[in-house]
Length: 310
Image 1 (cartoon, rainbow, N blue to C red):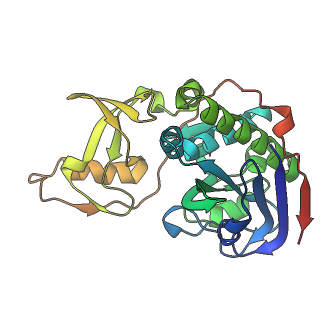
Image 2: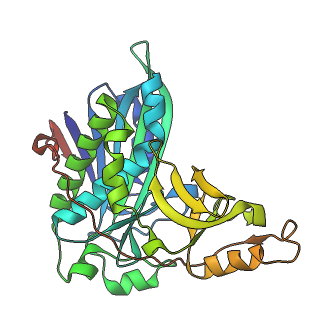
């Protein structure tokens, strides 16, 4: 598919620029906005995403998807498929990522990529489309010193591998995997990618985890905290958790680890748990697993019909 790449040396946010320029979108064409530095990079819940200059990949892919029932089912899986694309890119360099449900990509128990998917309804030539804005911040050559200054456990490809990487090659590989996977979603469905996502899904060596259904930063009650062992994901992408009450299918929430998990256990053990609440804010910890590689469509690897460096 044709790509139009717009590169800036410095920009507030590739995501914001892509949304501002959505009138440019046409069917079958991807607009790819990249930057050497973001001054107002953002992630989910409008949280700041650290974007130091010249060391990482900052990119937003914007494209159209027709409004129909098939794509209604595809949209919820886009962030997870984007995470899969990043894991496959990392594996192509001999690294061993894991995917913490739902879309956190980790190396050595630390997050190395942020993914943000936003969708708007637009009309082009009288036809209704979803305008998709899929942003990524991939930590490529960020130093250990910078990683340790941030407020969550993060890492970069260079910290793990002990060498620097070509950012353009990282972007090209990621784009190739992403476009291949999204084409599969559009032509078939999520089921074709689920085995590959399950292969990199972190299961915490079969240990029990605590799942918080309350949501990020919201008070959690005992009823909103579920203890169990991760079995994998079902055909809808929901996390399957083996609990004392049976298998639960979870589609919203987050996995708690570290001191977050300790806080949740305290709530679950409270004498009057139905009235016990707490806002759980802490640093999670993860383990590593490996996954088989997938070969992307070589023609998709950041070939472009237009390139502008601004």
